[in-house]
Structure formats: structure tokens, C-alpha cells
Image (tube, rainbow over all chains, first blue to last red; front, side, top):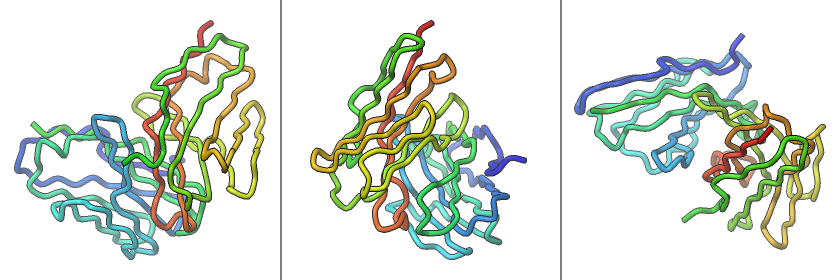
Length: 113
Length: 113
């Protein structure tokens, strides 16, 4: 009965590879997000989708491409991985764009070697 | 440029006493403030929030105070319990949340038996 789930939990890969992280929410929420927590522990917004449409795209390299097949899923695809992409990536969802509370998944720790 | 600052990386409090976690913000457009709690290897969990039209919100052992003129908010936990040991993040947004949450760096609360 996990509200927001992510797979995989850990991901170790080589520089230059392409990888995807999947996110699913069963809360019936309309809006989903991706956040990155870097080595300095800051959590920063990357993308926001509302009803499968992109509404926020912060300054993120275009190697990162979110894809929302339906409003319950928001996957993150990363091309040509770099060392600096190593971080913990959190998916989140909220009732609507203007909703005040976001609910987070458990995170995916990505390590690029 | 950190718009949300938590200047205490860690805080140690004896069980049963009051824990006070502080947060400062610089963006006067922020109109909603949230506290999240995070255990290791898990995602942030929503704890309590406050709108800028209020100066206090209470939920059980947790109370959040907002001082808009000082751009400061605090989370009080009383009495503190061992299960409260975690990292606490202050977060905020403006304009109904469409721009995602802006997080502080977190304060690691340690409850001593």
C-alpha cells in the first residue's frame, strides 16, 4: 500500500551509460515531481508534471528527460551519465499544482563510476 | 543563493525535553511553510505546515511558529521522544506550489535517552 514508490532503490552504473528511474503513485494525485539531493544534502526541484504535462523544468541538463505515460507515473531517463549525476533522486506527488503538501517516495541512490 | 536556511546542522536534546528547530527564509513571496522529517534511506515525510496568514499551528506534540516580519519559523517538539531522532527539513513555496518546494539543508535532531 506504498503511496509513492520508486525503482530501483540503488543504481550503480558507469559514466556514459543511459539509465531510467521509475516512479508510481497510488494516491490519485494530479501532480508529480522529481527532486535531486546532492552530496551537500540540498533537495532541489528538477521537474514537475501536472496531468502528464510538464509545468516546471528547472535548470537541468537536457540529458535528463522525464516521461509521464499516465498521471500515476513519472519516470526519469538520464542519458550519457556523468560523475556529477551521482545523487539521491526523490519522486513526489501532490493533489494538484496548487496543493500545499507533497508526498515523497523512498528515493533512488544513483552512483556513477 | 539559499532562500531557506537551517543554520544548525545538528541538535541534541534529552528525552522528555523540548526540541526547537529553527528556519529562516529570504524570499518574501513564500506563503506556505512545511516541515518534513526524514529517516536514513527513506524519503521525507510530511510533518506539519503553516500558511503565511497564521502565526501558529499545532498538531499533537508538534507546533510550528511563524514570524513573518523576521522571516523566521520554528518547529517545537514537546516532549521529545527517541523516535523523533531524524533529519528535519524546512521547506517553502510561493504561488500555490507550482514552482515546487524550496528546501533548507536540514537539521539532524538527536534525542538522548
